[in-house]
Image (tube, rainbow, N blue to C red):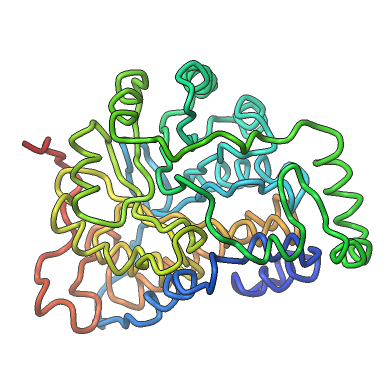
Length: 383
């Protein structure tokens, strides 16, 4: 596929679907159980409408922002996606390079097929690093050292996987790690020879796969405190969906939180992150950095999340559609689409910078929520 022909993220999704065997596309696309939470993520954005103003000079627009003390060219980035290498050979490197070229954050999954050191080297700079907390502290220490030595500025502790979500399509397709293709999927895989030769044989048979087996159902807030004492750089706790957990994250030393339901892939029936975002922002917004992910497909989605108080928006599937369709050039196109759409929406709303956004730019919210986005300039400790 020529990525330049993609007009939106859905075009990249369609191209990814054509290129990937069903066993892999279902893994990329699916949510847990009945996909209630995965659908809710999209529906939460679609339920909101804008309150644009007109005849405003927006000729000097900017999307530049600073998150956790790091400058970026736009207020969104790439979320961690486990086993991205099943979609494209070295997909993690492709996404890291594309994000680096666009000056956007990229979070490398613990379950990457490519080690953090090589991602940092080949991308020309370190990613943010996602961590699933291992049970063994010596294993955790080794992972932290590798991330630190690779130069990772931000550690993203993902907390919402005490057990794996019920993704029934993976069982039906015979999908698992190390990658296996069930008998029912063999014919489909053979019908996608480019994927079979270019991804399966190169990425999966010729190198070690990530470790997926560690138990996580023993993790608790004491682990966060321990992690905080060992990690000297920025720490984000991901998987927050309520005010109490947001406050606990701050009390245990987190520099930021990521409001996330794991893309609807864990607890089906968990709320959409956008639905709980305003309440969490009201409780802790002035005191911390707030990141949100889940269901992002348009620049309008980015603007809506920012208007409700997010400091940064992460997208996982959208850039991975690009990677699956065309590798690094596909990821670059996905990020370009999101940036162009975000800029266009900002202009059409009648605002020149994301700092001006707040609930007042959304229909029906400004009456009960007159305050603009919580200020990011000063972060006060809770106490």
